[in-house]
Length: 64
Image (tube, rainbow, N blue to C red; front, top):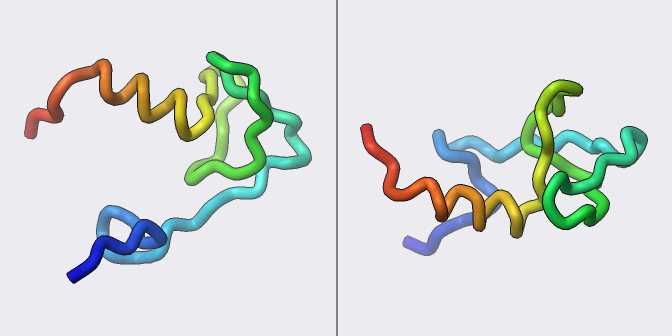
């Protein structure tokens, strides 16, 4: 069975939030962000897909 990137972690489709009107920029590389898989908060930085992936990679393996 092939991996479907359009699906969320629990089998449902991932809902993306259009944040174009908010004029968001990545906190690390300053690229424009137009969609997020969550509603952004004013008190937390947001990262583009590439920077977020690099940051998560640096956290090490996930522990359950």
